[in-house]
Image 1 (cartoon, rainbow, N blue to C red):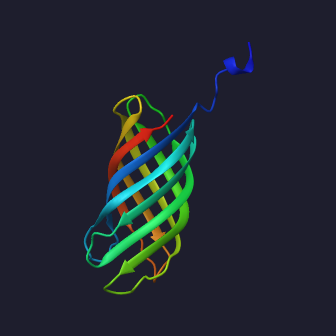
Image 2: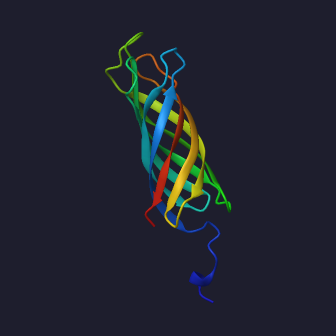
Image 3: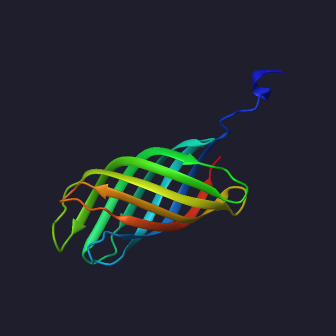
Length: 154
């Protein structure tokens, strides 16, 4: 028996891209911010790496932009695939009512969600909840709800 015949305890490598429709609330009475979240992840068994960006410019007064990179943990259960992601990076927050945000600052985000297989390479991201903070222009803490699709490249 050669080493390639042994089972891999960490699972196989996968690479995916995802796109989601997102709605965010910054808790300042400005209503919902609509936009999208997208990114890519590499996964091997339970542990992975995710790069994600969120753009929510639809609100008249508040706009958020952020990009984060960090670890991803996912379980591959028979019906659903729950996952948790956390990352740090950069963000921009603009609130025309209370502050102006011309610059970028540090940002972090934690997200948790659940996926379901639609086919051999396509998964529906049924629901994802995310919370984070953008340290620019006084700071803003968006809570985001998303749903979308994930396409496995390999």
